[in-house]
Image (cartoon, rainbow, N blue to C red; front, side, top):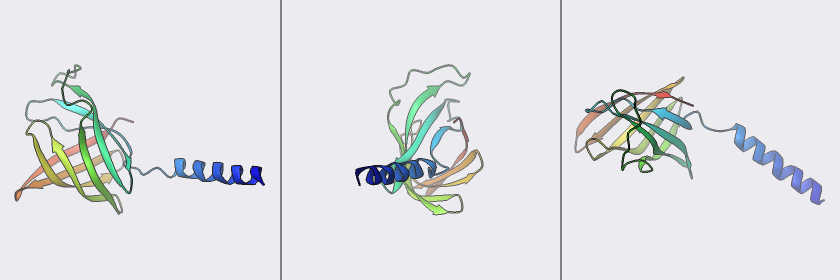
Length: 130
């Protein structure tokens, strides 16, 4: 009986690992107003997705020591189906603003858009790193 339970648990765990959402992974952001960009690691956070800045680069692609590394960039982003995500927030470090955002996934690119106080901004295309 113990073996049956263990086998069932292992099968369910393996199935969950293979069922990772396509949004999960590391994404290279569009360069900001200063030409800097980052790598954001997106993962499941309960029923939604969140993203943490894990690396930062200057306009020439050199590592940039930033106080923003480790900070939350995306939170509460929910899968809507068909590559669409919404209902979440995206924080833009260069402007220090949080946008009500949506994302649209297509292959290894994700289009990011967001609005704050009625002003909308195109967050550009983010490219999958891994």
